[in-house]
Length: 453
Image (cartoon, rainbow, N blue to C red):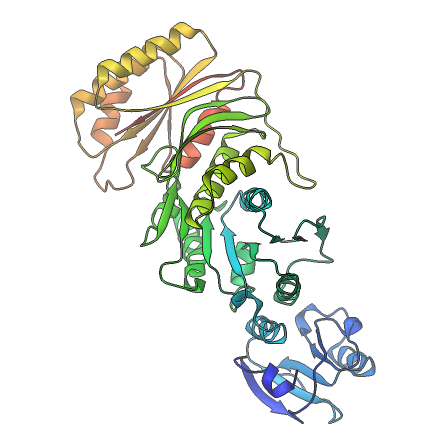
């Protein structure tokens, strides 16, 4: 490709030398340079001096060198290109060199703190069942079509990503699945990639402070700007506090607690699997998931939501989920001696709730954990009775608030808590984390009751 064409749309500050030269490859390390290469000199990542790196690249056959706007220009035997933004330059030049592969195939981007890899491989399993070729690109591995997975040498970068997408296009692979890490978003790895759909698994962080959480949320949200159309689907975990706030036209919601397009009912967790009734706008199906953990139930719902948003057959989707067993080199470790039954119920019929608690208690199977959502009704009488019902059966109660409520719920919280003499009370702001925490209280099995306002 001619250098002048290769630099289209890149953040170039200055070009010194000939522009009409043929570029046969791109290299990010001087030792990878071959005859006719464009070498991008990332001086802050060099193990040798800047001058040594440039000289080594020229000796290996570089015909053009990309440097920062402050770097010294060394000689005139090759063309020097100055850029004011290395990361965006690499993203744009990689897209150009490999003929913009993201525009020639369908791509789903998966982002979130957890579950990206699992959801990606579940989608790959669905595509395999449907007979649709797909390429899977993770932070340190890739898989094209039905070939075995391979590890990268180093981490994902835009050059590798576009190279493998280009290879997939040549092999007539229709779908690409890309893990979009927070670091990758910050470093502009996806600046020139266009997605057909995006999945948000969860958006809470490890920082445990609102300012950091909000920054993390805003950075992840920028992926929406990379959708090909305004109607491209966005699949969100509606039980996650931040992901819930991503709702827009074209969203598909999945979850167990908040009203969702894709949900699970009659859910039972086992040591190595789970079973549930999958509820979707296209119908209901019983599913056996062959990997353990409540988090993997959410991952399965995300993959189902994506499949339906892309008009795949529901039976193919279910078979793909059920035949998924694991990912390469990743072990699921869940310690559970007996099963956990999860049931959700509205708080509008307190007599029914009391009967459910009595039934759970009579089953004498493990403990009971209640996840109690406080709505904005401020009905003190209702919450007093709920507290009394919950308090009669011991165990744990996790209190959370309705996401749409902005009122102070202290009065109803106190009314319920006063009736829970023998209950260990916990507080959470995030439904997804509350349900995951509830499971940890029942290593020997038991019941979790989700009481929704």
